[in-house]
Image 1 (cartoon, rainbow, N blue to C red):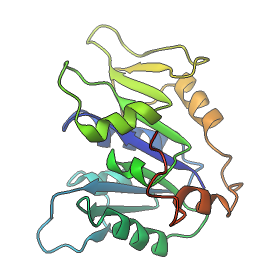
Image 2 (cartoon, rainbow, N blue to C red):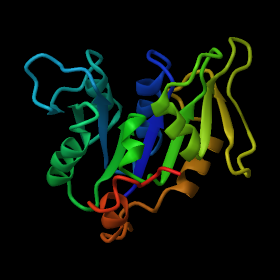
Image 3 (cartoon, helix red, strand yellow):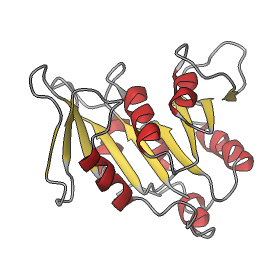
Length: 206
């Protein structure tokens, strides 16, 4: 199983767009995409599975990009752990999961964490500090003339400048595949290392 987290410091900065780009760029993985929000969504259950692909919602965009399954999890600070328990109960031990969330890093240790660079020098919210601490790479929006570029793929924390987050260039795809476990070769015991009940409260926090 592969675990990916995409985090950012604000709204409308391209998190969903980037996740859709990652799903489309890595079709060999059987992705389950999960958007976590602390805002209730009407009468929807805490963990809602999207069934329709299309442009109408973030979760339907995940499916349109190629995700096998897509979920919306509405969970505050006190019930996020319970929401994750519900998710793991639905997924097999070999599922490849990609999260749109900062807070989930308090409970999982991802194979890959990508931070979207803030477009302004705003004060980072506490949950984004988790992303900054655990990120493996940074993605930022390229200027209108800059096109797509990347720097330091051999470094610990490379920076990718993308004009379009939904189109992942070949060099970044190669870097992603080098970071992630090979599809179908995940160790079932890794599920315990990611989500062990006794360890998850401190996993990923330095």
